[in-house]
Image 1: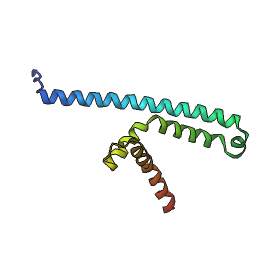
Image 2 (image 1 turned 90 degrees about the horizontal axis):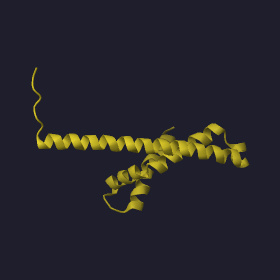
Image 3 (image 1 turned 120 degrees about the vertical axis):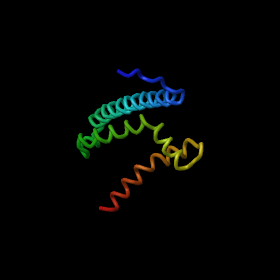
Image 4 (image 1 turned 180 degrees about the vertical axis):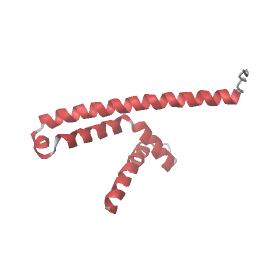
Length: 114
Protein backbone atom coordinates (compact mmCIF):
# COMPACT_ATOMS: atom_id res chain seq x y z
CA UNK A 1 0.00 0.00 0.00
CA UNK A 2 1.37 3.37 -1.04
CA UNK A 3 1.90 6.09 1.47
CA UNK A 4 -0.10 9.24 0.53
CA UNK A 5 2.11 12.10 -0.49
CA UNK A 6 1.99 15.44 1.26
CA UNK A 7 0.25 18.30 -0.45
CA UNK A 8 2.16 21.34 -1.53
CA UNK A 9 1.16 24.74 -0.17
CA UNK A 10 -0.56 25.65 -3.44
CA UNK A 11 -2.53 22.40 -3.52
CA UNK A 12 -3.59 22.84 0.11
CA UNK A 13 -4.69 26.41 -0.55
CA UNK A 14 -6.64 25.35 -3.66
CA UNK A 15 -8.44 22.62 -1.70
CA UNK A 16 -9.28 25.07 1.08
CA UNK A 17 -10.65 27.63 -1.40
CA UNK A 18 -12.79 24.94 -3.05
CA UNK A 19 -14.17 23.82 0.33
CA UNK A 20 -15.03 27.41 1.28
CA UNK A 21 -16.76 27.93 -2.07
CA UNK A 22 -18.77 24.76 -1.54
CA UNK A 23 -19.84 25.95 1.93
CA UNK A 24 -20.86 29.32 0.47
CA UNK A 25 -22.93 27.61 -2.23
CA UNK A 26 -24.71 25.52 0.43
CA UNK A 27 -25.38 28.61 2.56
CA UNK A 28 -26.72 30.53 -0.45
CA UNK A 29 -28.92 27.61 -1.49
CA UNK A 30 -30.43 27.36 1.99
CA UNK A 31 -31.05 31.11 2.06
CA UNK A 32 -32.70 31.04 -1.37
CA UNK A 33 -34.84 28.05 -0.41
CA UNK A 34 -35.95 29.81 2.76
CA UNK A 35 -36.75 32.92 0.70
CA UNK A 36 -38.85 30.86 -1.71
CA UNK A 37 -40.86 29.25 1.07
CA UNK A 38 -41.34 32.59 2.82
CA UNK A 39 -42.49 34.10 -0.47
CA UNK A 40 -44.92 31.23 -1.04
CA UNK A 41 -46.36 31.64 2.45
CA UNK A 42 -46.71 35.38 2.09
CA UNK A 43 -48.27 35.01 -1.36
CA UNK A 44 -50.82 32.53 -0.02
CA UNK A 45 -51.75 34.94 2.78
CA UNK A 46 -52.05 37.86 0.36
CA UNK A 47 -54.01 35.73 -2.11
CA UNK A 48 -56.51 34.66 0.53
CA UNK A 49 -56.93 38.09 2.13
CA UNK A 50 -57.25 40.33 -0.94
CA UNK A 51 -60.46 39.58 -2.87
CA UNK A 52 -59.22 41.02 -6.18
CA UNK A 53 -56.31 38.59 -6.25
CA UNK A 54 -58.49 35.68 -5.12
CA UNK A 55 -61.06 36.31 -7.87
CA UNK A 56 -58.76 37.05 -10.80
CA UNK A 57 -55.74 34.81 -10.29
CA UNK A 58 -55.58 31.12 -9.44
CA UNK A 59 -53.84 30.00 -6.27
CA UNK A 60 -51.19 28.14 -8.27
CA UNK A 61 -50.11 31.29 -10.09
CA UNK A 62 -50.00 33.24 -6.83
CA UNK A 63 -47.84 30.54 -5.22
CA UNK A 64 -45.46 30.42 -8.19
CA UNK A 65 -45.04 34.20 -8.27
CA UNK A 66 -44.55 34.30 -4.50
CA UNK A 67 -41.84 31.65 -4.67
CA UNK A 68 -40.10 33.37 -7.56
CA UNK A 69 -40.13 36.78 -5.90
CA UNK A 70 -38.99 35.33 -2.56
CA UNK A 71 -36.12 33.48 -4.25
CA UNK A 72 -35.04 36.60 -6.12
CA UNK A 73 -35.08 38.73 -2.99
CA UNK A 74 -33.04 36.13 -1.11
CA UNK A 75 -30.39 36.00 -3.83
CA UNK A 76 -29.88 39.68 -4.63
CA UNK A 77 -26.17 39.32 -3.87
CA UNK A 78 -25.76 36.96 -6.82
CA UNK A 79 -27.59 39.36 -9.11
CA UNK A 80 -25.25 42.12 -7.98
CA UNK A 81 -22.23 39.97 -8.83
CA UNK A 82 -23.65 39.13 -12.26
CA UNK A 83 -24.25 42.82 -12.95
CA UNK A 84 -20.75 43.71 -11.77
CA UNK A 85 -19.29 41.26 -14.26
CA UNK A 86 -21.09 43.03 -17.10
CA UNK A 87 -20.69 46.66 -15.99
CA UNK A 88 -17.19 46.42 -14.49
CA UNK A 89 -18.20 49.10 -11.95
CA UNK A 90 -18.67 49.26 -8.18
CA UNK A 91 -22.10 50.92 -8.41
CA UNK A 92 -24.33 48.52 -6.44
CA UNK A 93 -27.68 49.88 -7.67
CA UNK A 94 -26.61 49.71 -11.30
CA UNK A 95 -25.25 46.20 -10.80
CA UNK A 96 -28.54 45.06 -9.21
CA UNK A 97 -30.58 46.40 -12.12
CA UNK A 98 -28.25 44.94 -14.73
CA UNK A 99 -28.14 41.60 -12.91
CA UNK A 100 -31.93 41.47 -12.59
CA UNK A 101 -32.24 42.55 -16.21
CA UNK A 102 -30.41 39.47 -17.47
CA UNK A 103 -33.22 36.95 -16.75
CA UNK A 104 -35.87 39.51 -17.69
CA UNK A 105 -34.15 40.03 -21.04
CA UNK A 106 -33.94 36.29 -21.64
CA UNK A 107 -37.66 35.93 -20.84
CA UNK A 108 -38.51 38.77 -23.20
CA UNK A 109 -36.45 37.14 -25.91
CA UNK A 110 -38.32 33.87 -25.41
CA UNK A 111 -41.67 35.64 -25.55
CA UNK A 112 -40.69 37.47 -28.75
CA UNK A 113 -39.52 34.26 -30.39
CA UNK A 114 -42.88 32.58 -29.86
